[in-house]
Length: 445
Image (cartoon, rainbow, N blue to C red):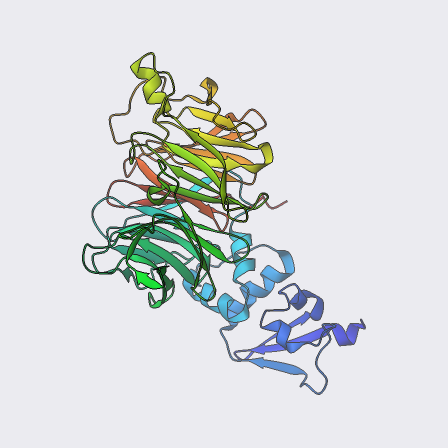
């Protein structure tokens, strides 16, 4: 590419900037600058020497420097929200986000800020969005925040209690809710994250009739399927499957006798085996059930329950009370956690086997917490996360050694946490306070 051809003059709001097409190409094909060039990133023929862009020149100077250096410096005279608005116009939000914090690493996470919820009472769930935003569910309301943590219009389900929520993309949220007796509502819907508008509902049909139902835990597959635990008034107890794009029901797995698929607390799609993990956990049920469902073969291919396990003392009974479970495909195992934050592991290659508890992970030393305990698990980029009281523990390596703890005293116990968009969000039980944890960017050399 010749020097003269690579040189670009831009008139932004009356201020002249000179740069190169090579620098602007860093913005990417889908950016504002991608529209200014042909497929080879050469200037389009017949264009003027100066390209006029009627935008804020001060913000453009910051963003151009970001493309040149990969570093973000925001002068004190430029409001951050103004810069983010301009970055959105140019299609540079991903560049701004990656410059504000480094790649996600649980051992390097630092508390960025805490936010007070918009309603009193216990939160139901917090879910990280793919672009660094999140949604917080409590009661019949879901509050949505973008990656700048600006709140969008709330999603109001009109007194239907929210059970779970999940992001399909950065502007689409699926919400599951309870049916109110005799009202024919509840179920599951797809909502706009930016406006809160209901786009469509996911129906359950039985004997060619649309049925009212309660939707519970949610999971999403890589081939655009949505899974939800379902309870209805006819025989629709089990796991429903819908197409994300059309909203049409495409399958239903009816629960076998003696199992509680319709009451499942946790669903997780296993991409490697095309199976769905279904877990019904304490305290929703006195007995815990964990299973893997193969929808291609229409059968349960692995299962575990604590029914019939020997109990020699009350302590062993407490250890059996599984509070959360997560499948770890790389090691062909399932990790579980109890109310003492003991981590346990089950081998997926042996059906109905016992839990191998790891005493090295124990942090509570057998002492029950004074506040309500909501242990949760997450697996992200080879690191295992487990919440307990007001902290989150990070485990690494083949033996899952405790390597760091994330603690924030304000807000009470952590009732839920979620990882996505290179952020960790932790929801506290007190007044829906939630924390945002980020990995600092690497130091400037």
